Length: 92
Image (cartoon, rainbow, N blue to C red):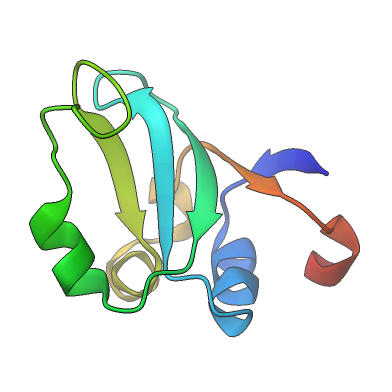
């Protein structure tokens, strides 16, 4: 278990394993963030209930990354932060 840099390869691996979002306890102003991968049944329903003002995880608004959207819209150089990987052998 360890933090690894967020890359397209890591995002693809997470997506293949059923993860669809990266949630952070970092605020939107803390860059780069640290993320925990999560599986949610309906990403868009989850986003409707995500409180970006921070009442879910923190006090200043929390960072959230939708894996599918990031893979479609972000280049490698645009990806920032670290993600917690439980079983690193599965990702290399």
